[in-house]
Each structure stands twice: as C-alpha cells, then as structure tokens.
Amino acid sequence: MVYTMRDVAKQAGVSPTTVSRVLNKAHYISEETEKRVLEVVRELNYYKNVHARRLATGKSDLFGMVISEIANPYFAEVIRGFQGAAWDHGYDVVLLNTEYIESRTQSVIRKLVESDVRGVAIMTSSIKYGAASALTEAGIGVVFSSLKRVDKLVSNVATNYARGIQQAIEHVVDLGHRRAAVIAGPEMNIKQVLVAGLKQKGLNPFPITNSQHGVDAGASAVRDILSAPDIPTVIFCGSDLIAMGAMSALEEAGLKIPEDVSIVGIDDITFACLARPSLTTIRVPREALGITSFQALDKMLKLKRQRGADYSLDTELIVRNSTAPARRRTLNPAKSR
Image (cartoon, rainbow, N blue to C red; front, top):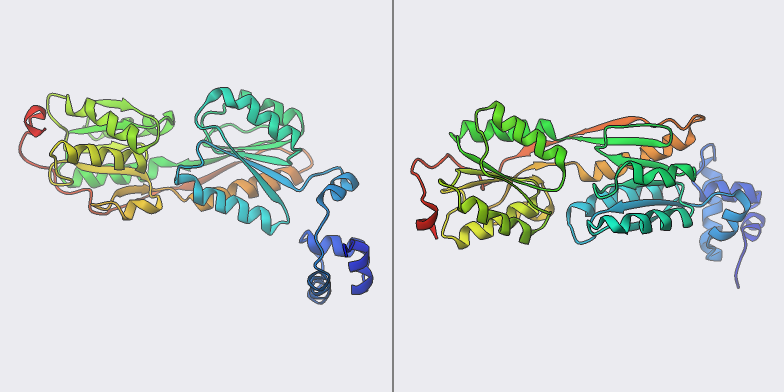
C-alpha cells in the first residue's frame, strides 16, 4: 500500500504541514514531534512525492553541480561536500560534467534550466561568466569557483592558491633550488600566481608549458622540459595528476625523483600520498569548497535582494618525499635518456 503525507500526519497526530516541515528539516520543530513523525515515516515506509511538492510549492528540491571531469579524483571530495550539505537541508543534487569541452556548455545550462534547479555550483573553468546568464535570467542562483566577481544571484568561492604557492616556493628555495620549470594546468589564475611568485624569488621559470589535467598530459609536457638546455632542479605542476604523469615520464627518461628533479603538485588528492615517492603538494580544501559552495547558494537565495557574496578558502603546503635539496651537477638532457 502506498501511503500519503496525510496518512503519516493522521497516525502521528500532527498536521500535514508539520510532516512536511520535519521531512524538509525546517527549524522550530520540537525534538519530540520530529521523533514521532520520523517513527511513523519508518513504520509506513513513506517516501516524499517530490513531483507533488514541486506542483504545490512551485519550487524544486534540486541543486546542480557542474564539474569538468567525473574521472578526475580532484572532484570527489568537492561533490561529497556539496551533496552532503544539500542532503542535510533536504535537497537533492543533479551532477553534470563538461569533459573540458566548451561546446557542451549550452547543453549543460539547458539541462539545468529544464531541471528547474534552485541553484548551481559551477566548479569548472570551461563555463565562463557570460555563459551562465541564462541561469540567472531563469532565477537560478550560481556560485563560481575563483571567478572573482559577484552580482545578483552570483556568488564566488575563491581558493587562495597564493598562500600555498608561496609556502611551496619558500620550501624549494630553502632546499637550494634556483632553476625551476612549470607545467601549468588550464586554470590561468593558478599559472599567473605561480609564475609571478617564482620570478619574485629569482627562480625565473623555464620552460613554462601548458597542459590539460591528467597523467598523460603531464607526461607529454615533460618532453619540452627534457629538451631545455639544462634540466631544471624542480618542476611545479598545475595539479597532482599532472605531477604524477611528469614523475613517470622523468623516471622513464632515467632521472631520479627527488635526487635529480624535485616535483611539486597542487590539490593533494588521495593518491598523492600513495605515489612513489609520495608527492609534495599544495592542499586544496576540496570538501570545504563543496560545503561552502552550497552554503553560499542557500544563503543568497534566502536574501530578499539575492545579492551574491565573496568567500575564500586557504591552501597549505604538504611536504612529502618528492622534494629534496637541489642537485649540484648539471644534467645534459641527451645523456639523461
């Protein structure tokens, strides 16, 4: 037998409105009432009819999240944080990914609008500010990651990479490194902060290469570094996946890590401590990024003017075994292979 909210209310001795407020984790419900209603819900094996609720209230129970790539382990904790926060408030999450393909942007945005989501966390650089106007025009709140611009229905959660990058640069300088290279990911702000920080410390990086996130991309980018007149003593990578690919390619070329070349990553994904050697990296608080993104949306949508706000999360250096004192000898790229 399929039970309704009225059945739950009747057996619990409360109104259907009270049942709805309990199930949607509303405030100002006594613990005794909440306990009684939830016991009846379990006894009757009652499930909310989200479609009926949408018709009744004119609002959905959905929030959206857009990421670059579902296979990238960076996003696992971001998703967990966002989804957990949404569930704690009685909402569900629709997850979409772009695979770094800009042409997917319109399809993703159309899907979000058609799904009638309340708000969207855009955690990918492949969707620009202007492309999201269709969301705000539909009354959907948007939170970007490190966009550095807020507006009505638009908030921003910035990751303070500068702090962790500065710690990493000071770390390698203390180890005696003077020749650095950079394998930058697709995020331009990280590249700019990293290159500027290295130059400020006199480590004019060369070469500076660009790549997508991924092990294969990191391995491919190492070829440019191996063709330089002198192999640098330290390589900064735009992500941990890039770093792991670089480590693999360097070892295949006969170089030892960290004795010949030190490696620094960014993200501190789960696999970073499992790499051999374990990876020195800049930790990004990814679960906190997910939680803060939901909180930013939830708060903004409850405001009368729905004005967005800026939020910031700090990064920090995690020192492991992929960095060591700079080698003293010059390595000839041709002889190292």
